[in-house]
Length: 391
Image 1: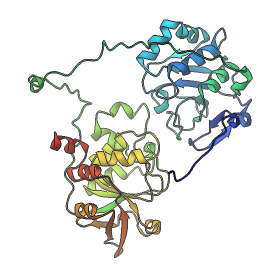
Image 2 (image 1 turned 135 degrees about the vertical axis):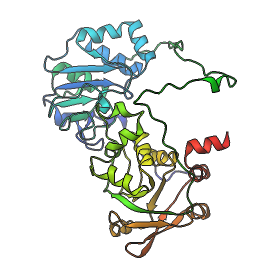
Image 3 (image 1 turned 90 degrees about the horizontal axis):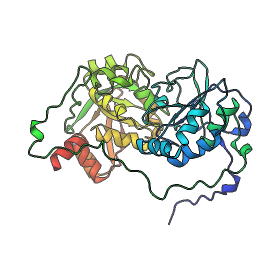
Image 4 (image 1 turned 45 degrees about the horizontal axis):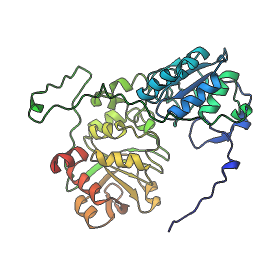
């Protein structure tokens, strides 16, 4: 039995673009056709398989990228890059004028290839939030590899159906697998003798504590709907090199929403964040949970969570709760004192937890809908503590 059945007529689908600044802001390419573009980026972690790359190479073969366009291509893995080189497709891309990037995170999170100010960039990635590209006013559109490749040649938004039917690409019967750079772990007998080298930008992982009996803390931040992981922990070339330095990278936590959050949270020592609907949408960057953990955030109460970010909060030992009645969101102000007594027992007894707004003098219910494993992780103070406990 299914709650809902969705029927899709594939013959009715048309090439689409997610327009700035949300993957939900979708238009047909036909509506944008002819508009000038400045940049095209293909690959990274999305739309970067061997099949995707072979389609791109086919479209670029024997042609040259438009002189007004910068084209960058990042194969999805070392394996894909190697196989493109072996079959000659990589040479086709280079001949056409593409810049070949490493198989890693890059333009998607503002690590290189940031578009010019107000520049229009077509990308085959999965996120186009404002400022994420490294250019505050960059106009990022998400498109298919076929749309990206043909538009790189024409210099404008172009419907790839103008090319006619693409050939039926045949993938190799066997894929190249080269694990020569995979280093096996040391034996259990030798593990204690291994020295972990930490430079000045590498700091220890923030320590999480088992769930306290009572969470009594002020609301250090109240935010609205559709807060993304880019709001919580911004991307960009200035910030991402600090990913191994949680104390330093936490200085940018929620700076997009409130530049004073970092200092306020540290001063409070422990706090609770209140948010609206779809809190934590976007890339599931772990630092969007680790930075709040370091800053003493004990719980996040929202109207609703994006699924993966909610899981990351649990992994970090931060309790994610949702309002039983969304109207209670409006009754809470930043810096209100909130109190949750017998947290663990309330979570164990059912999926409803009572919260007291000490400042305003009223109680409200929140939903704590967790699996048994997630409950155990929260009790332990996060996934690492849980794993260590059960090892």
